[in-house]
Image (tube, rainbow, N blue to C red; front, side):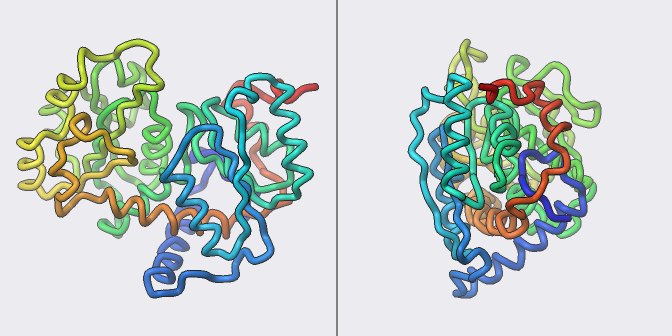
Length: 326
């Protein structure tokens, strides 16, 4: 069951997902009972290769690696240098020369972590690539839900917001369905893809979505930086129509629903300030669980091995390794 890389959710088997969730439970028990560090990756090195700014994901991986006793190096990257194929190849050659064991990659271009994985013996972890995937976010989301619902099969999760640009929506919905959880999307017609998988409900009306009776309401951050045109009239209008307002929070409280958000939160856009103090908000739980999930992933991967689905992954991206060609 060992793997070299974690690049996406689609290629994971349910048994692998369950294993990682179980391991995360064990790691969480350790560091919540004053065991802050174990020697699992002692002598190993983890390189953080972030071409996009990140606080939560970056710090979570760094803390996870250090709690496993790995050495962590932050690779300073010129964001514009990756635009040429030659720069990508040279970066990978540099990483190979550093003999690092793990590379955690975040980039605005879909498929780049997979390209790096095919050119290095290090284990590569996709920490978010464009609007494509964010596998460890999906795992921590599933772990957070499973803490509240030990048998999550048949539960319903309503994902609200900018589905079109969200790698979180793609990864999390794929993983939840693998666990037998029903998923639905809600958002403006301009931000919910017209064609979604047949087993995902598509709503554009808040009341209709709530009539579906979800157990969890998952708010997505509106990603203004990925929108080259305006997809809705105004932030105020978005909050009124699709956000969790004070009145909607009262209804959610009456129904006993859980609220999640991957962060960072745009207050007054996706949700009102009162949500942060809502007793069934799992937003803080998600941050905490990110550490144990990433500990489990780092401990599970095996540097130097072969990734068994490299060709299939490249085919899904439609990229191959052309950017890496001399």
